[in-house]
Length: 269
Image (cartoon, rainbow, N blue to C red; front, side):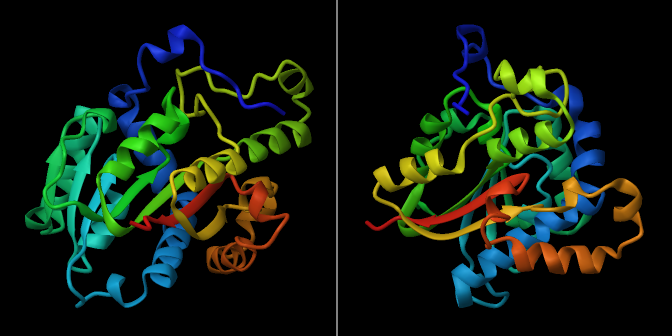
């Protein structure tokens, strides 16, 4: 299955979530799906950053690019790290600001209401850059990753999580959406929460390697949860689901079928 190329009209404007902020928050972060995502992201960063990521260590300078309402960013702020959060959506930025104030974390945040592509040059550079569930919404994901790398200090870590095209294909097959597969129509319409540009992990990994970065970690996010029948899923404990998601997240072939794919990579210079 080839990766879909954006049309000229697609490239005119990347998706902005001002109109879907409430729906996005309710569907993505308030249920088991969001808790699986957060658990695996924290696990990966804990293991790959080691002592530098633990509360009480020297605070990291962190950029959360396209950080939305800042759910994951707040978990880092609680550990004492300093966050810069940018987002193209004014509604998301305001929600993130209010959430930080509610959690008494506002002093650890700097908010930038801008797209990733228009980020200013930071001084100093960042130790950790997060870009979670963003690349699948932009027409030029390579340009976004290149911009993020310019924000990073030597030895800094980049955390990329994106919508996995392999999962999109497999889910369409098991649901019988054969016309969608035959016509190579894997993208969403742009009207809802189905991403516009699902990505192939191998293409992202190859691009990262071409930038001279060292891959530290690869994990599938929700490698089986989304394929379970709802009745069965509802009868299983969330604790067991999260534990097994962690167990199989780095094991092939399950990793490559994760609904999302997470990569941690480090700059080498």
